Image 1: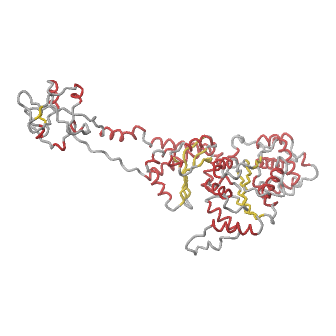
Image 2 (image 1 turned 120 degrees about the horizontal axis):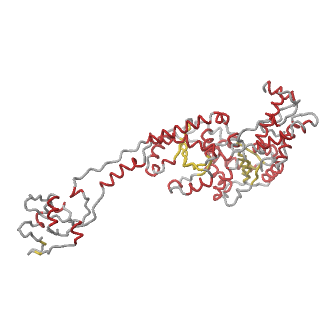
Image 3 (image 1 turned 60 degrees about the vertical axis):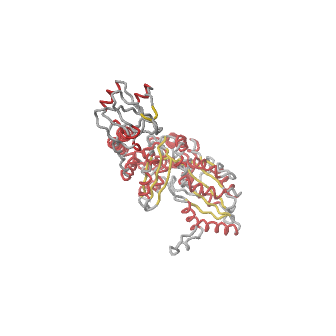
Length: 558
Protein backbone atom coordinates (compact mmCIF):
# COMPACT_ATOMS: atom_id res chain seq x y z
CA UNK A 1 0.00 0.00 0.00
CA UNK A 2 1.47 3.41 -0.98
CA UNK A 3 1.80 6.46 1.26
CA UNK A 4 -0.96 8.21 -0.71
CA UNK A 5 -3.32 5.32 0.00
CA UNK A 6 -2.42 5.43 3.70
CA UNK A 7 -3.17 9.17 3.88
CA UNK A 8 -6.47 8.62 2.14
CA UNK A 9 -7.52 5.93 4.66
CA UNK A 10 -6.35 7.95 7.69
CA UNK A 11 -8.10 11.09 6.42
CA UNK A 12 -11.51 9.38 6.42
CA UNK A 13 -10.75 7.03 9.38
CA UNK A 14 -11.12 3.93 7.24
CA UNK A 15 -9.93 0.50 8.28
CA UNK A 16 -9.54 -0.79 4.70
CA UNK A 17 -9.98 0.50 1.14
CA UNK A 18 -13.77 0.62 0.65
CA UNK A 19 -13.77 0.30 -3.12
CA UNK A 20 -11.10 -2.29 -3.83
CA UNK A 21 -11.45 -4.00 -7.19
CA UNK A 22 -10.31 -7.36 -5.80
CA UNK A 23 -13.31 -9.69 -5.22
CA UNK A 24 -13.81 -10.12 -1.47
CA UNK A 25 -16.35 -12.64 -0.20
CA UNK A 26 -16.47 -10.82 3.14
CA UNK A 27 -17.90 -7.74 1.41
CA UNK A 28 -20.89 -9.04 -0.49
CA UNK A 29 -23.59 -6.55 -1.49
CA UNK A 30 -26.80 -8.61 -1.32
CA UNK A 31 -29.14 -6.13 -3.01
CA UNK A 32 -29.77 -5.67 -6.76
CA UNK A 33 -30.83 -9.33 -7.02
CA UNK A 34 -27.39 -10.63 -6.04
CA UNK A 35 -28.59 -12.67 -3.05
CA UNK A 36 -31.34 -14.34 -5.11
CA UNK A 37 -28.86 -15.28 -7.85
CA UNK A 38 -26.46 -16.83 -5.32
CA UNK A 39 -29.21 -18.82 -3.65
CA UNK A 40 -30.52 -20.11 -6.99
CA UNK A 41 -27.05 -21.16 -8.14
CA UNK A 42 -26.44 -23.12 -4.94
CA UNK A 43 -29.89 -24.73 -5.14
CA UNK A 44 -29.36 -25.83 -8.77
CA UNK A 45 -26.01 -27.42 -7.95
CA UNK A 46 -27.33 -29.17 -4.84
CA UNK A 47 -30.29 -30.51 -6.89
CA UNK A 48 -27.92 -32.09 -9.42
CA UNK A 49 -28.47 -29.70 -12.35
CA UNK A 50 -25.85 -30.86 -14.92
CA UNK A 51 -25.32 -27.45 -16.51
CA UNK A 52 -25.75 -24.05 -14.83
CA UNK A 53 -25.01 -20.72 -16.51
CA UNK A 54 -24.25 -17.26 -15.12
CA UNK A 55 -23.78 -14.30 -17.46
CA UNK A 56 -23.26 -10.58 -17.14
CA UNK A 57 -21.32 -7.73 -18.68
CA UNK A 58 -17.75 -6.95 -17.67
CA UNK A 59 -17.48 -5.65 -14.11
CA UNK A 60 -20.83 -6.87 -12.73
CA UNK A 61 -19.36 -9.17 -10.06
CA UNK A 62 -19.31 -12.60 -11.75
CA UNK A 63 -15.95 -13.65 -10.29
CA UNK A 64 -17.10 -12.73 -6.78
CA UNK A 65 -20.21 -14.86 -7.32
CA UNK A 66 -18.02 -17.84 -8.31
CA UNK A 67 -16.02 -17.56 -5.10
CA UNK A 68 -19.19 -17.31 -3.05
CA UNK A 69 -20.48 -20.49 -4.68
CA UNK A 70 -17.24 -22.28 -3.81
CA UNK A 71 -17.39 -20.98 -0.26
CA UNK A 72 -20.96 -22.14 0.29
CA UNK A 73 -20.77 -25.58 -1.33
CA UNK A 74 -20.89 -28.39 1.18
CA UNK A 75 -17.68 -30.48 1.06
CA UNK A 76 -19.58 -33.65 1.96
CA UNK A 77 -21.79 -33.14 -1.08
CA UNK A 78 -19.30 -32.20 -3.79
CA UNK A 79 -15.73 -31.76 -4.87
CA UNK A 80 -15.19 -28.63 -6.97
CA UNK A 81 -12.51 -27.47 -9.40
CA UNK A 82 -12.34 -23.82 -10.40
CA UNK A 83 -10.83 -22.60 -13.68
CA UNK A 84 -10.50 -18.80 -13.75
CA UNK A 85 -8.78 -18.19 -17.09
CA UNK A 86 -9.45 -21.20 -19.35
CA UNK A 87 -7.71 -21.28 -22.72
CA UNK A 88 -6.55 -23.89 -25.13
CA UNK A 89 -7.79 -27.26 -26.25
CA UNK A 90 -10.15 -29.70 -24.58
CA UNK A 91 -7.20 -31.95 -23.72
CA UNK A 92 -5.43 -29.07 -21.94
CA UNK A 93 -8.58 -28.37 -19.95
CA UNK A 94 -8.84 -32.02 -18.87
CA UNK A 95 -5.17 -32.04 -17.93
CA UNK A 96 -5.70 -29.00 -15.68
CA UNK A 97 -8.74 -30.57 -14.05
CA UNK A 98 -6.92 -33.86 -13.45
CA UNK A 99 -3.99 -31.98 -11.96
CA UNK A 100 -6.33 -30.13 -9.56
CA UNK A 101 -7.78 -33.48 -8.54
CA UNK A 102 -4.29 -34.82 -7.85
CA UNK A 103 -4.20 -37.19 -10.82
CA UNK A 104 -2.17 -37.28 -13.99
CA UNK A 105 1.00 -35.64 -12.61
CA UNK A 106 2.83 -38.89 -12.05
CA UNK A 107 1.94 -40.21 -15.47
CA UNK A 108 3.09 -37.05 -17.19
CA UNK A 109 6.76 -37.27 -16.19
CA UNK A 110 8.00 -37.28 -19.77
CA UNK A 111 9.58 -40.76 -19.50
CA UNK A 112 6.76 -42.73 -21.12
CA UNK A 113 6.78 -43.27 -24.82
CA UNK A 114 3.12 -42.28 -25.13
CA UNK A 115 1.53 -39.22 -23.44
CA UNK A 116 -1.13 -39.91 -20.82
CA UNK A 117 -4.75 -40.15 -21.95
CA UNK A 118 -6.38 -37.47 -19.82
CA UNK A 119 -9.87 -38.40 -21.00
CA UNK A 120 -9.40 -41.84 -19.43
CA UNK A 121 -7.83 -40.37 -16.28
CA UNK A 122 -10.72 -37.90 -15.97
CA UNK A 123 -13.33 -40.67 -16.20
CA UNK A 124 -11.46 -42.63 -13.54
CA UNK A 125 -11.61 -39.60 -11.24
CA UNK A 126 -15.34 -39.26 -11.83
CA UNK A 127 -15.85 -42.88 -10.82
CA UNK A 128 -13.69 -42.41 -7.71
CA UNK A 129 -15.60 -39.27 -6.63
CA UNK A 130 -18.93 -41.00 -7.28
CA UNK A 131 -17.84 -43.89 -5.07
CA UNK A 132 -17.34 -41.33 -2.29
CA UNK A 133 -20.99 -40.29 -2.71
CA UNK A 134 -20.07 -36.86 -4.04
CA UNK A 135 -20.40 -34.92 -7.28
CA UNK A 136 -17.68 -33.12 -9.21
CA UNK A 137 -18.55 -29.44 -9.77
CA UNK A 138 -16.47 -27.77 -12.47
CA UNK A 139 -16.63 -23.95 -12.25
CA UNK A 140 -15.40 -22.25 -15.43
CA UNK A 141 -15.04 -18.47 -15.14
CA UNK A 142 -14.62 -16.41 -18.33
CA UNK A 143 -16.08 -19.38 -20.22
CA UNK A 144 -16.67 -17.26 -23.31
CA UNK A 145 -12.90 -17.42 -23.89
CA UNK A 146 -12.98 -21.18 -24.41
CA UNK A 147 -12.54 -22.34 -27.98
CA UNK A 148 -15.92 -23.22 -29.41
CA UNK A 149 -14.68 -26.76 -30.10
CA UNK A 150 -13.77 -27.10 -26.40
CA UNK A 151 -17.19 -25.82 -25.35
CA UNK A 152 -18.79 -28.30 -27.71
CA UNK A 153 -16.94 -31.24 -26.17
CA UNK A 154 -17.88 -30.08 -22.67
CA UNK A 155 -21.53 -29.90 -23.70
CA UNK A 156 -21.31 -33.35 -25.28
CA UNK A 157 -19.67 -34.66 -22.11
CA UNK A 158 -22.50 -33.67 -19.77
CA UNK A 159 -25.21 -34.52 -22.32
CA UNK A 160 -23.89 -37.99 -23.10
CA UNK A 161 -25.94 -40.75 -21.52
CA UNK A 162 -22.89 -42.98 -21.33
CA UNK A 163 -20.93 -40.69 -19.01
CA UNK A 164 -21.15 -40.57 -15.24
CA UNK A 165 -24.08 -38.57 -13.89
CA UNK A 166 -22.11 -36.97 -11.07
CA UNK A 167 -20.52 -34.23 -13.20
CA UNK A 168 -21.90 -30.67 -12.96
CA UNK A 169 -20.57 -27.63 -14.78
CA UNK A 170 -21.09 -23.96 -13.91
CA UNK A 171 -20.26 -21.77 -16.93
CA UNK A 172 -19.67 -18.11 -16.06
CA UNK A 173 -19.00 -15.43 -18.66
CA UNK A 174 -20.03 -12.35 -20.56
CA UNK A 175 -23.02 -12.12 -22.88
CA UNK A 176 -21.00 -13.71 -25.70
CA UNK A 177 -21.35 -17.00 -23.82
CA UNK A 178 -25.07 -17.05 -24.66
CA UNK A 179 -24.30 -16.69 -28.36
CA UNK A 180 -21.77 -19.54 -28.22
CA UNK A 181 -24.19 -21.86 -26.45
CA UNK A 182 -26.90 -21.05 -29.00
CA UNK A 183 -24.66 -22.51 -31.67
CA UNK A 184 -24.16 -25.67 -29.61
CA UNK A 185 -27.83 -26.29 -28.77
CA UNK A 186 -28.07 -28.89 -31.53
CA UNK A 187 -25.62 -31.15 -29.66
CA UNK A 188 -27.62 -31.24 -26.46
CA UNK A 189 -31.27 -32.29 -26.46
CA UNK A 190 -31.61 -33.70 -22.95
CA UNK A 191 -30.17 -30.68 -21.08
CA UNK A 192 -31.48 -27.11 -21.12
CA UNK A 193 -28.38 -25.09 -21.96
CA UNK A 194 -30.31 -21.80 -21.93
CA UNK A 195 -31.30 -22.07 -18.27
CA UNK A 196 -29.31 -19.70 -16.10
CA UNK A 197 -29.05 -16.33 -14.44
CA UNK A 198 -27.84 -12.85 -15.35
CA UNK A 199 -26.22 -10.17 -13.20
CA UNK A 200 -27.77 -6.86 -14.18
CA UNK A 201 -26.14 -3.42 -13.69
CA UNK A 202 -27.22 -1.30 -10.71
CA UNK A 203 -30.01 1.22 -10.89
CA UNK A 204 -29.46 4.74 -9.51
CA UNK A 205 -30.92 3.84 -6.13
CA UNK A 206 -28.92 0.60 -6.00
CA UNK A 207 -25.76 2.59 -6.78
CA UNK A 208 -26.44 4.82 -3.77
CA UNK A 209 -27.03 1.81 -1.53
CA UNK A 210 -23.90 0.09 -2.81
CA UNK A 211 -21.59 3.06 -2.14
CA UNK A 212 -22.97 3.52 1.37
CA UNK A 213 -22.71 -0.22 2.05
CA UNK A 214 -19.05 -0.35 1.05
CA UNK A 215 -18.22 2.73 3.14
CA UNK A 216 -19.92 1.21 6.17
CA UNK A 217 -18.06 -2.09 5.77
CA UNK A 218 -14.76 -0.20 5.42
CA UNK A 219 -15.16 1.20 8.93
CA UNK A 220 -16.53 4.74 8.51
CA UNK A 221 -17.44 5.72 12.09
CA UNK A 222 -21.07 6.13 13.05
CA UNK A 223 -23.52 7.05 10.34
CA UNK A 224 -21.12 9.30 8.43
CA UNK A 225 -21.28 6.86 5.52
CA UNK A 226 -24.75 8.24 4.73
CA UNK A 227 -23.48 11.77 4.04
CA UNK A 228 -19.92 11.23 2.86
CA UNK A 229 -21.01 11.41 -0.81
CA UNK A 230 -23.40 14.21 -1.85
CA UNK A 231 -26.45 13.26 -3.87
CA UNK A 232 -25.15 15.12 -6.92
CA UNK A 233 -21.88 13.13 -6.70
CA UNK A 234 -23.90 9.90 -6.55
CA UNK A 235 -25.88 10.97 -9.62
CA UNK A 236 -22.73 11.77 -11.56
CA UNK A 237 -21.13 8.42 -10.64
CA UNK A 238 -24.22 6.58 -11.86
CA UNK A 239 -24.38 8.56 -15.11
CA UNK A 240 -20.72 7.75 -15.80
CA UNK A 241 -20.72 4.08 -14.78
CA UNK A 242 -24.31 3.22 -15.78
CA UNK A 243 -24.53 0.75 -12.92
CA UNK A 244 -21.27 -1.08 -13.68
CA UNK A 245 -19.81 -2.26 -10.36
CA UNK A 246 -16.17 -2.02 -11.37
CA UNK A 247 -16.47 1.52 -12.74
CA UNK A 248 -18.54 2.58 -9.73
CA UNK A 249 -15.69 1.45 -7.48
CA UNK A 250 -13.13 3.30 -9.56
CA UNK A 251 -15.03 6.60 -9.64
CA UNK A 252 -15.95 6.51 -5.94
CA UNK A 253 -12.34 5.85 -4.91
CA UNK A 254 -11.18 8.65 -7.18
CA UNK A 255 -13.58 11.04 -5.40
CA UNK A 256 -12.28 10.07 -1.95
CA UNK A 257 -8.65 10.56 -2.97
CA UNK A 258 -9.32 14.00 -4.49
CA UNK A 259 -11.23 15.05 -1.39
CA UNK A 260 -8.24 13.98 0.73
CA UNK A 261 -5.84 15.98 -1.46
CA UNK A 262 -7.97 19.11 -1.06
CA UNK A 263 -8.53 18.60 2.67
CA UNK A 264 -12.28 18.01 2.25
CA UNK A 265 -14.35 15.52 4.27
CA UNK A 266 -17.19 15.23 1.81
CA UNK A 267 -17.28 14.30 -1.85
CA UNK A 268 -19.28 16.51 -4.20
CA UNK A 269 -19.78 16.43 -7.96
CA UNK A 270 -16.75 18.68 -8.56
CA UNK A 271 -14.49 15.85 -7.42
CA UNK A 272 -15.93 13.26 -9.81
CA UNK A 273 -14.26 13.38 -13.21
CA UNK A 274 -16.57 11.80 -15.75
CA UNK A 275 -14.68 9.92 -18.48
CA UNK A 276 -15.50 11.14 -21.99
CA UNK A 277 -17.58 8.80 -24.09
CA UNK A 278 -17.62 6.15 -21.38
CA UNK A 279 -21.06 4.87 -22.28
CA UNK A 280 -19.97 4.11 -25.83
CA UNK A 281 -16.66 2.57 -24.75
CA UNK A 282 -17.62 0.54 -21.69
CA UNK A 283 -15.86 -2.61 -22.73
CA UNK A 284 -12.83 -0.67 -23.97
CA UNK A 285 -12.50 1.12 -20.63
CA UNK A 286 -11.92 -2.26 -19.00
CA UNK A 287 -9.67 -3.59 -21.70
CA UNK A 288 -5.98 -3.76 -20.83
CA UNK A 289 -4.08 -0.93 -22.46
CA UNK A 290 -7.07 1.40 -22.74
CA UNK A 291 -5.12 4.40 -21.46
CA UNK A 292 -2.42 3.83 -24.05
CA UNK A 293 -4.97 3.55 -26.85
CA UNK A 294 -6.79 6.65 -25.73
CA UNK A 295 -3.63 8.76 -25.58
CA UNK A 296 -2.26 7.51 -28.89
CA UNK A 297 -5.43 6.85 -30.85
CA UNK A 298 -4.64 9.45 -33.55
CA UNK A 299 -1.16 8.01 -34.11
CA UNK A 300 -2.59 4.51 -34.33
CA UNK A 301 -5.28 5.68 -36.72
CA UNK A 302 -2.71 7.46 -38.89
CA UNK A 303 -0.52 4.34 -38.93
CA UNK A 304 -3.42 2.12 -39.94
CA UNK A 305 -4.38 4.59 -42.67
CA UNK A 306 -0.79 4.69 -43.95
CA UNK A 307 -0.64 0.90 -44.14
CA UNK A 308 -3.92 0.86 -46.03
CA UNK A 309 -2.69 3.48 -48.54
CA UNK A 310 0.55 1.56 -49.16
CA UNK A 311 -1.36 -1.66 -49.76
CA UNK A 312 -3.73 0.08 -52.16
CA UNK A 313 -0.77 1.49 -54.13
CA UNK A 314 1.09 -1.82 -54.31
CA UNK A 315 -1.89 -4.04 -54.96
CA UNK A 316 -2.51 -4.51 -58.70
CA UNK A 317 -5.76 -3.23 -60.13
CA UNK A 318 -8.52 -5.60 -61.16
CA UNK A 319 -7.86 -4.95 -64.84
CA UNK A 320 -4.17 -5.85 -64.41
CA UNK A 321 -5.09 -9.04 -62.60
CA UNK A 322 -7.40 -10.05 -65.45
CA UNK A 323 -5.01 -9.05 -68.27
CA UNK A 324 -3.14 -12.34 -68.36
CA UNK A 325 -6.33 -14.39 -68.19
CA UNK A 326 -7.98 -12.38 -70.97
CA UNK A 327 -4.92 -12.79 -73.20
CA UNK A 328 -4.99 -16.53 -72.76
CA UNK A 329 -8.68 -16.72 -73.52
CA UNK A 330 -8.11 -15.00 -76.86
CA UNK A 331 -5.57 -17.63 -77.86
CA UNK A 332 -8.07 -20.37 -77.07
CA UNK A 333 -10.94 -19.08 -79.28
CA UNK A 334 -12.04 -21.80 -81.72
CA UNK A 335 -14.18 -21.62 -84.84
CA UNK A 336 -17.46 -23.55 -84.81
CA UNK A 337 -17.39 -26.99 -86.35
CA UNK A 338 -17.94 -26.42 -90.08
CA UNK A 339 -16.35 -26.99 -93.48
CA UNK A 340 -13.90 -24.42 -94.83
CA UNK A 341 -13.86 -23.85 -98.58
CA UNK A 342 -10.39 -23.26 -99.98
CA UNK A 343 -10.53 -22.71 -103.76
CA UNK A 344 -7.57 -23.95 -105.76
CA UNK A 345 -5.27 -21.59 -107.69
CA UNK A 346 -3.50 -23.05 -110.66
CA UNK A 347 -0.40 -20.90 -110.66
CA UNK A 348 0.57 -21.55 -107.03
CA UNK A 349 2.48 -24.71 -106.14
CA UNK A 350 0.43 -27.13 -104.16
CA UNK A 351 1.51 -28.35 -100.76
CA UNK A 352 0.53 -31.86 -99.95
CA UNK A 353 -0.80 -32.44 -96.48
CA UNK A 354 -1.62 -35.93 -95.20
CA UNK A 355 -5.29 -36.59 -94.94
CA UNK A 356 -5.04 -37.55 -91.27
CA UNK A 357 -3.82 -34.05 -90.41
CA UNK A 358 -6.27 -32.02 -92.48
CA UNK A 359 -9.69 -31.07 -91.11
CA UNK A 360 -12.52 -31.15 -93.63
CA UNK A 361 -14.44 -27.96 -92.94
CA UNK A 362 -16.29 -25.22 -94.78
CA UNK A 363 -15.60 -21.51 -94.59
CA UNK A 364 -18.24 -19.31 -92.98
CA UNK A 365 -18.82 -17.72 -96.41
CA UNK A 366 -19.78 -21.04 -97.95
CA UNK A 367 -21.93 -22.01 -94.97
CA UNK A 368 -23.72 -18.71 -95.17
CA UNK A 369 -24.39 -18.94 -98.91
CA UNK A 370 -25.44 -22.61 -98.59
CA UNK A 371 -24.10 -23.29 -102.13
CA UNK A 372 -22.80 -26.74 -103.13
CA UNK A 373 -21.23 -27.96 -106.36
CA UNK A 374 -22.36 -31.22 -107.96
CA UNK A 375 -20.44 -34.31 -106.97
CA UNK A 376 -19.65 -37.39 -109.06
CA UNK A 377 -18.75 -40.88 -108.12
CA UNK A 378 -15.84 -42.62 -109.74
CA UNK A 379 -15.64 -46.20 -110.83
CA UNK A 380 -14.12 -47.32 -107.55
CA UNK A 381 -16.93 -45.76 -105.49
CA UNK A 382 -14.85 -42.83 -104.27
CA UNK A 383 -16.14 -39.31 -104.43
CA UNK A 384 -14.42 -36.96 -106.87
CA UNK A 385 -14.43 -33.19 -106.84
CA UNK A 386 -15.65 -31.06 -109.74
CA UNK A 387 -12.87 -29.38 -111.64
CA UNK A 388 -12.54 -25.83 -112.90
CA UNK A 389 -13.51 -25.11 -116.47
CA UNK A 390 -9.91 -24.35 -117.40
CA UNK A 391 -8.81 -27.82 -116.37
CA UNK A 392 -7.22 -26.71 -113.11
CA UNK A 393 -7.63 -28.54 -109.87
CA UNK A 394 -6.51 -31.93 -108.61
CA UNK A 395 -7.83 -35.21 -107.36
CA UNK A 396 -8.25 -34.03 -103.78
CA UNK A 397 -9.31 -37.39 -102.45
CA UNK A 398 -5.85 -38.80 -103.17
CA UNK A 399 -3.36 -35.97 -102.84
CA UNK A 400 -4.84 -33.92 -99.98
CA UNK A 401 -5.72 -30.23 -100.12
CA UNK A 402 -4.10 -27.21 -101.74
CA UNK A 403 -3.42 -24.32 -99.36
CA UNK A 404 -3.14 -20.97 -101.10
CA UNK A 405 -2.53 -17.33 -100.07
CA UNK A 406 -5.48 -15.58 -98.45
CA UNK A 407 -5.46 -12.76 -101.03
CA UNK A 408 -6.00 -15.24 -103.83
CA UNK A 409 -8.66 -17.05 -101.87
CA UNK A 410 -10.68 -13.90 -101.43
CA UNK A 411 -10.38 -13.10 -105.13
CA UNK A 412 -11.70 -16.49 -106.10
CA UNK A 413 -14.56 -16.11 -103.66
CA UNK A 414 -15.65 -13.03 -105.54
CA UNK A 415 -15.87 -15.15 -108.70
CA UNK A 416 -18.08 -17.64 -106.85
CA UNK A 417 -15.69 -20.51 -107.50
CA UNK A 418 -16.37 -23.13 -104.84
CA UNK A 419 -14.87 -26.49 -104.10
CA UNK A 420 -16.53 -28.97 -101.77
CA UNK A 421 -14.26 -31.24 -99.76
CA UNK A 422 -15.38 -34.80 -98.91
CA UNK A 423 -17.12 -34.73 -95.54
CA UNK A 424 -15.31 -37.73 -94.05
CA UNK A 425 -14.51 -36.22 -90.59
CA UNK A 426 -15.77 -33.39 -88.38
CA UNK A 427 -13.32 -31.56 -86.12
CA UNK A 428 -13.12 -28.35 -84.16
CA UNK A 429 -10.24 -26.30 -85.49
CA UNK A 430 -8.76 -23.17 -83.96
CA UNK A 431 -8.96 -20.15 -86.21
CA UNK A 432 -5.20 -19.68 -86.18
CA UNK A 433 -4.73 -23.10 -87.85
CA UNK A 434 -5.59 -21.47 -91.20
CA UNK A 435 -5.48 -17.71 -90.75
CA UNK A 436 -2.43 -17.15 -88.53
CA UNK A 437 0.68 -18.88 -87.19
CA UNK A 438 0.08 -21.03 -84.14
CA UNK A 439 0.99 -19.31 -80.88
CA UNK A 440 2.32 -20.96 -77.77
CA UNK A 441 0.14 -20.92 -74.65
CA UNK A 442 1.43 -18.67 -71.88
CA UNK A 443 1.67 -20.51 -68.58
CA UNK A 444 0.71 -18.70 -65.37
CA UNK A 445 3.53 -17.97 -62.98
CA UNK A 446 3.31 -19.89 -59.68
CA UNK A 447 1.78 -17.95 -56.78
CA UNK A 448 4.16 -16.46 -54.25
CA UNK A 449 3.11 -18.07 -50.96
CA UNK A 450 5.46 -15.91 -48.85
CA UNK A 451 4.19 -12.66 -50.36
CA UNK A 452 0.57 -13.74 -49.96
CA UNK A 453 1.08 -14.70 -46.31
CA UNK A 454 2.82 -11.40 -45.51
CA UNK A 455 0.15 -9.41 -47.36
CA UNK A 456 -2.68 -10.96 -45.29
CA UNK A 457 -0.62 -10.49 -42.12
CA UNK A 458 -0.29 -6.76 -42.89
CA UNK A 459 -3.98 -6.48 -43.76
CA UNK A 460 -4.83 -7.71 -40.27
CA UNK A 461 -3.56 -4.46 -38.72
CA UNK A 462 -6.46 -2.55 -40.24
CA UNK A 463 -8.85 -5.39 -39.46
CA UNK A 464 -7.96 -5.18 -35.75
CA UNK A 465 -9.31 -1.62 -35.61
CA UNK A 466 -12.77 -3.22 -35.63
CA UNK A 467 -12.01 -4.71 -32.21
CA UNK A 468 -12.60 -1.30 -30.65
CA UNK A 469 -15.74 -0.64 -32.68
CA UNK A 470 -17.55 -3.80 -31.57
CA UNK A 471 -16.80 -5.75 -34.76
CA UNK A 472 -17.33 -9.48 -35.27
CA UNK A 473 -15.60 -12.09 -37.39
CA UNK A 474 -15.63 -15.81 -38.20
CA UNK A 475 -12.82 -18.01 -36.88
CA UNK A 476 -11.82 -20.58 -39.49
CA UNK A 477 -8.87 -22.45 -38.04
CA UNK A 478 -6.05 -22.53 -35.49
CA UNK A 479 -2.70 -24.02 -36.53
CA UNK A 480 -0.48 -24.95 -33.60
CA UNK A 481 2.76 -26.65 -34.61
CA UNK A 482 6.34 -25.87 -35.58
CA UNK A 483 5.30 -25.94 -39.25
CA UNK A 484 2.14 -23.86 -38.78
CA UNK A 485 3.35 -20.96 -40.94
CA UNK A 486 4.54 -23.17 -43.81
CA UNK A 487 1.32 -25.20 -43.72
CA UNK A 488 -0.77 -22.04 -43.92
CA UNK A 489 1.25 -20.77 -46.89
CA UNK A 490 0.43 -23.97 -48.76
CA UNK A 491 -3.23 -23.47 -47.94
CA UNK A 492 -3.29 -19.86 -49.15
CA UNK A 493 -2.06 -20.67 -52.67
CA UNK A 494 -4.75 -23.33 -53.10
CA UNK A 495 -7.32 -22.21 -55.67
CA UNK A 496 -10.21 -22.38 -53.22
CA UNK A 497 -8.54 -20.22 -50.57
CA UNK A 498 -6.90 -17.94 -53.13
CA UNK A 499 -10.36 -17.01 -54.43
CA UNK A 500 -11.32 -15.64 -50.97
CA UNK A 501 -7.91 -14.38 -49.88
CA UNK A 502 -9.09 -10.77 -49.49
CA UNK A 503 -11.41 -11.90 -46.68
CA UNK A 504 -8.74 -13.81 -44.76
CA UNK A 505 -6.94 -12.27 -41.78
CA UNK A 506 -4.06 -13.77 -39.83
CA UNK A 507 -2.96 -13.31 -36.22
CA UNK A 508 0.27 -14.96 -35.14
CA UNK A 509 1.54 -15.98 -31.73
CA UNK A 510 5.28 -16.64 -31.58
CA UNK A 511 5.63 -18.83 -28.48
CA UNK A 512 4.27 -21.40 -28.73
CA UNK A 513 3.96 -20.93 -32.46
CA UNK A 514 0.24 -20.64 -33.17
CA UNK A 515 -1.55 -19.06 -36.12
CA UNK A 516 -5.20 -18.00 -36.06
CA UNK A 517 -7.09 -17.54 -39.35
CA UNK A 518 -10.27 -15.45 -39.45
CA UNK A 519 -12.76 -14.61 -42.19
CA UNK A 520 -14.21 -11.12 -42.74
CA UNK A 521 -15.24 -8.33 -40.38
CA UNK A 522 -18.86 -7.49 -39.59
CA UNK A 523 -20.68 -4.84 -37.58
CA UNK A 524 -22.99 -7.26 -35.75
CA UNK A 525 -23.13 -10.88 -34.68
CA UNK A 526 -26.23 -11.48 -36.82
CA UNK A 527 -24.36 -10.25 -39.90
CA UNK A 528 -21.38 -12.46 -39.07
CA UNK A 529 -23.60 -15.50 -38.61
CA UNK A 530 -25.24 -14.85 -41.97
CA UNK A 531 -21.80 -14.69 -43.58
CA UNK A 532 -20.76 -17.92 -41.86
CA UNK A 533 -23.86 -19.70 -43.15
CA UNK A 534 -23.02 -18.51 -46.67
CA UNK A 535 -19.43 -19.78 -46.67
CA UNK A 536 -18.37 -22.26 -49.34
CA UNK A 537 -18.96 -25.90 -48.36
CA UNK A 538 -15.25 -26.65 -47.88
CA UNK A 539 -15.12 -23.94 -45.19
CA UNK A 540 -18.38 -24.94 -43.50
CA UNK A 541 -16.99 -28.47 -43.18
CA UNK A 542 -14.33 -27.25 -40.71
CA UNK A 543 -17.08 -25.89 -38.42
CA UNK A 544 -16.21 -22.17 -38.25
CA UNK A 545 -17.84 -20.08 -35.55
CA UNK A 546 -18.62 -16.41 -34.86
CA UNK A 547 -16.93 -14.32 -32.18
CA UNK A 548 -16.08 -10.68 -31.58
CA UNK A 549 -12.76 -9.40 -32.94
CA UNK A 550 -11.92 -8.21 -29.43
CA UNK A 551 -12.29 -11.78 -28.15
CA UNK A 552 -10.20 -13.03 -31.06
CA UNK A 553 -7.42 -10.64 -30.03
CA UNK A 554 -7.66 -11.77 -26.41
CA UNK A 555 -7.27 -15.40 -27.46
CA UNK A 556 -4.01 -14.60 -29.23
CA UNK A 557 -2.68 -12.51 -26.34
CA UNK A 558 -3.49 -15.15 -23.73
